[in-house]
Image 1 (tube, rainbow, N blue to C red):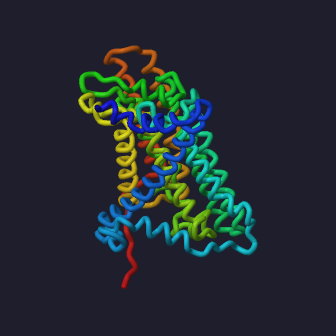
Image 2: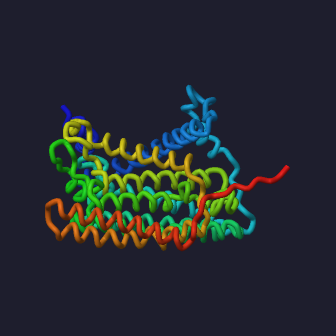
Image 3: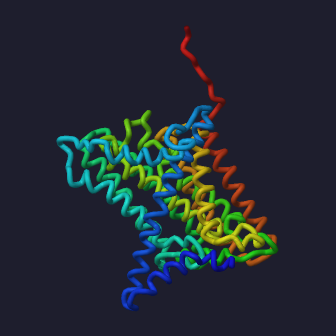
Length: 392
């Protein structure tokens, strides 16, 4: 029974395409999977937005959405209708074609990320041998869309916001990519399906997730930091921070085009959360061996939503960084730490089993973190923060 529930979507797809001629079944199966992805993830986007507004309201001791529907649950529907009916204003001197294409390019590139994500046992659209490379190749396309939006608006603030966004995205995308190299080194594969299968083992009741190793934990923390910056989430939301530079690269966007940018950012956040879950948290595998009876796709989406809740908690807790702090943090701390973690993973791989490699690798990771942090604080002579108030 549990296997049937676990494979219910696969069985349903096979049942539907079984009515078609054999030559059409492959293409029909792909189309059905694409329709499912387009239906599921925008729905998760609506849930994430409502959850964020409710959660931030609770953190800031205020009401969240509570007017549309019971407990405000229909607020995403109202927001969607409002976005569809608002006037689409395009600046007179804007490049109308590029201005129109920018949000479309962003959304298409983001949805392509899901083609290689294993969302459950036997639930992946395309099992590419280089799935991880495909994911990063498609993710890099979003930078083109950001530049198109800023350049086509013919607005100095939009262009400046786009350039700042691209500088941030390139800096942290490098860190994001390098943080995943340790997974490739240990698993020996670029296929996301193979990486999940390599973690689908248990010692007693505990899983063999990569996050439970010194190099895996370090890589996971770096991945979380880089993914937060890559998706322009607080405290790295400078490209579109109203207190920084109006609304960034989509200052001149309104109506449904703005809604597409909004959708693209959240869907990309869900995709990167799915990648992090796949690489470090076992993907669709259960956290305990006694829970393997729970459907694999349910574990995958539960982990993604837990990641989203973590992002919401960060936004409600941490203040926004300055641009120089953001860039210095990427190039002077996170990137060197990531490169050192590659060495730690190599040592782990060639030292074989036993407790000695745990001691050596853990010591190297902790010493690097503490040492690099102390050096940066010593250079900057960071002291206690002082608050100054205007005198009455």
